[in-house]
Length: 101
Image 1: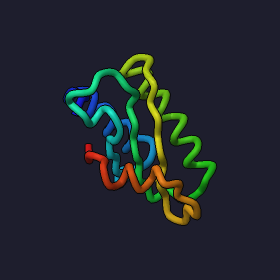
Image 2: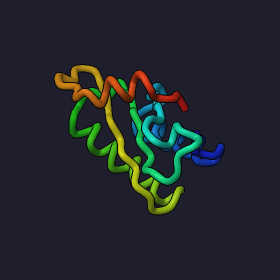
Image 3: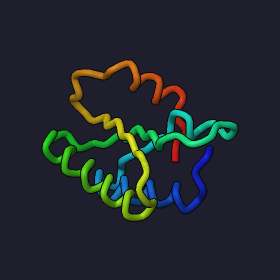
Image 4: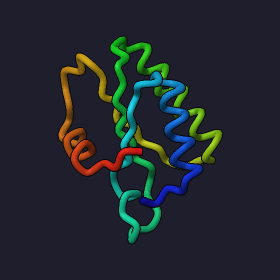
């Protein structure tokens, strides 16, 4: 995994602060490969929030917190929540290949 301890802890803290204490986060994509170079930070976030407007606000707050703490870099978030009716195929890939933080 190409995230250091500070980055991992910062992501966990931001996700829990924005999406709730029971939120879970997985890193997936190129940052899970120690041999790769560069790449954005791809996160799968699972929350028990269910109101879409609250989830959108939480995602924006989380992006802002992470950008402030980690510096400007590309951070992609997939948000899974109860009642989500559509899961693009990337959700399965992220769930299967993701590394829990």
